[in-house]
Amino acid sequence: MNRIKKSLINFLNLFLYDENRRKEFEKFNSQMDIYKNMPPDELKFEYILLNAKYEKKKSELTLFLLTIALSVLMNVWDKFFSFMKMAIEYAGKTAGDSFEIAKISFIISSIIVIFITAVIFFMLFAFINDIHKMKINIAMIEDVGACASN
Figure 1 (cartoon, one colour):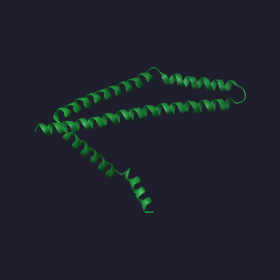
Figure 2 (tube, helix red, strand yellow):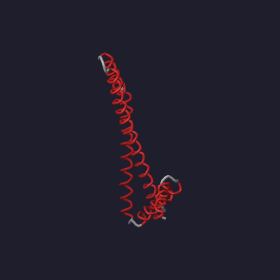
Figure 3 (cartoon, helix red, strand yellow):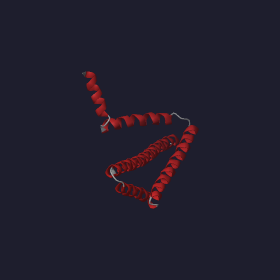
Figure 4 (spheres, helix red, strand yellow):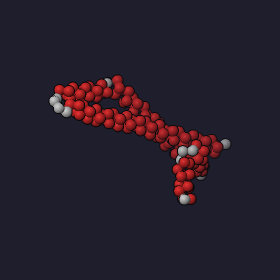
């Protein structure tokens, strides 16, 4: 019983702000210790490398967003909906199971749209999350560098 209670408390701690903040603070302190113990040349290398990765990731995010905007401007979804219209018209012209054909076409196309939308949102979230983490690391290195030079 005690084990179940501990498991439940650990599960609930995943969603608590204070617990998440404490874990993030522990990660921050350990990363700061790593940066503080680096020689100045290695710290400079880490800063330059991380800054370059950060700029590359920002460029990739910009390119990804431009690609999405371009696909919207080129009416990619219009072609998709015209396909749906053709499938429904075809289902209406066939005898017998026309409702079933239209229903299956709608379900398949809805699954495709939901999948594409989910992939796009997942990629955007991953890009933004990576950029955020890189920016935090850059700020930590800058802080360590500023403290070392004083």
